[in-house]
Length: 241
Image: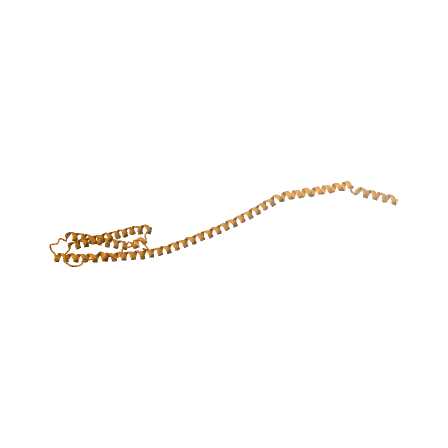
């Protein structure tokens, strides 16, 4: 009796335990469920992760570009500063050279004007001596005709006065020349004026030489005739001469 009961219990227990096939099927179902769950989770997470990665990459690129732009701006600023400094130095050097040039022109021009004024003064003294000589001749020999000589002498005096006026004009125009927008051109015109003055002085000198020769040709009295050698050396018209 007991044996029969034991057998029945064993049979009941065996009927309740799953078979190997059932166990295997259950395991497969569980694995499939886990795979599907993982795929579902991956499909839900991937787009978000990809979008965040793209945003991060774009942010890094933007930061690099901004750094490059900042670097370019700093370099450009430095270049502009260097250019401005160089330009200022060039202007300072140009102004310094301009002042040196103006000083040289003033000195040269002053010496030139002084020489011409002295030459005009010497010619004026010579004319005075010639006038004195003519007066003595007329006093000693009233019958001698000196009208042509006096006419030439008066012409020389008039020309000498014009030269004096031209020298004064050139002297007064010096500062205008130095402050001109184109001092080179302005100074060139004054140099031409100075050349004309020099030419006029030479012509007056020759005219006085001829007058002195005419006086000598009168052969009157024993008074000495003035000599044109009092005129002195020629006047230079080139800087540095």
